[in-house]
Length: 199
Image 1 (spheres, rainbow, N blue to C red):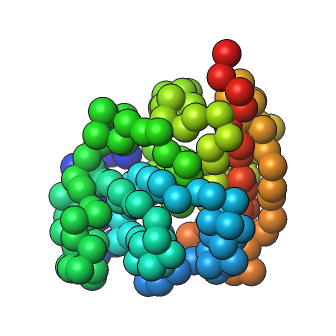
Image 2: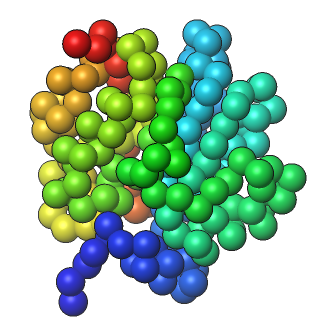
């Protein structure tokens, strides 16, 4: 059977079957500390693409951020709104690659989004991130590194990620989270990619 993780229907089925090994059931390890660094530096307009249950949304809103969480899967959006009904207005069903996510943003948060996309969409991911983040903005979050075959989640080797983002971003910070979900093993890395000056 062919896997098409670029289709909303693929993810709809996962949510309907409650097959969500990427769901952390709360804030990921280290998120609060790493987010505090970015917030102190002025990252106040935040986009959460492929937001899933959007556990990070409440923490960011409580810190006074303007946040938009989007997912193109209707069941994912319904779940996020059910978990956080008071923040339903911050959660939209939308395609990251559409005008619905036009910035500019200070910070686009990466968590199980790049690794969910078919590898053929990686160049589109990088160019879209560059389009919605102005110079000085950050693409920051958890990247799934490695050379495991198959997916999703799809690993990406660090050298490949560097080549993908280097035309637009510079890697400013990288560290290993204290813990990760079993589906990611020891492959997750917190990374902060700073948007370079636009040509």
